[in-house]
Amino acid sequence: MRILADAREVLYGGKARSLARLLRAGLPVPDGFVVQADCSFASQGGETVRERIDQELSRLGDPAVAVRSSAADEDTAGASGAGMYDTVLGVRGIDDVCAAIASCRRSADSARVRDYRRRGGRSGDPVTGMAVLVQVLVEAEVSGVMFTPLSVGEPTRIESSWGLGSSVVNGELTPDAFEVGPSGAITAAIGVKDVRTDAVEEHNGTKTSVVAEELQTRRTLDDETLRSLKSLGVRASAVLGGPLDIEWAIAGDEIWIIQSRPVTAPLPAMPAIDPAIGSDSVSNSGLTQEKTLDGTPGSHGVVTAPARIVSGLSAFSDVKPGEVVICSFTDPSWTPLFTIAGGVVTEVGGALSHAAIVAREYGIPAVLGVTSARARLANGDLITIDGTAGTITMH
Image (cartoon, rainbow, N blue to C red; front, side, top):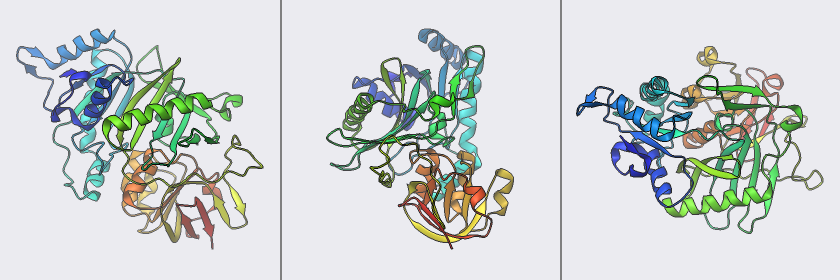
């Protein structure tokens, strides 16, 4: 186990190595340490790993921390592993931090990880050895995800919401979405941020609360901050040598890079915004024509197939190969459905969420943020989903 700045070896996994490179280059990465893939909690050289973790937590000031996986085959150019392994936020104290580390390691043997690895042409066996990254938790006022451009001339894509970034990456709400062009020109589509997640000071973990109505449709990022994020993304891409999927957080006046991984598949363009409505209009995806539903383009492709309403894990067995899954939102436990579904439609979520990233890797179309999709569609309805345009057409 070493502090993050020394994380150079294969035993630290992809996530920790990337962040260590950014930290050494002077970019803002929260302090932390890594528990190597070969470390157990047994005695090691007269000093237990638990004791060394306790020492590192004391060095950091015993703050709330984020405990994240850093698997050897995670955060690579060919497979992001987005959302596949456990992340535990807001934990404090040696007992709960050690329990969170164990949880991250156990997630390497989950059904979703096995399915994901098989889909990528790898063994379905669990990952051998899981490094775990422990970082000071940035108790963010605003956070989100940024995709730096795949090629010169393309814009930087940014999605954001109030509080910690888990609500954005897990697709639990429809975030604000922005494009910042090479010249600094900004396009904005304002989402509905009706919930937020924050660390809880009184005890370990996080809580999700309802956002005040006047903040739900208020823009989370001003133009100056968006351009600062873009500049930070350019610097990070130069250090790591390619386009990046960056999770970031803002506390006070400082922007922090929380995670960084290569972009694994091209992103559909943001929908054009009607100049008569304006760039700061609220995104109310819904029925735009009598037989067309409109949403956020999430993953390229077009498919015509029956709809299948899925309200939870208990309905997974009802999905037939090739059907389009219609749901409120997806979390990592839904990934096995992506191996048989013809497409995915969600009622909330953004194009930079984990579900959309995995859909792009799997090559299935996805449309996100389609308001009341489960009420507007029924099981067996024949629909055409266009993940590039962000539309669902009913036949």
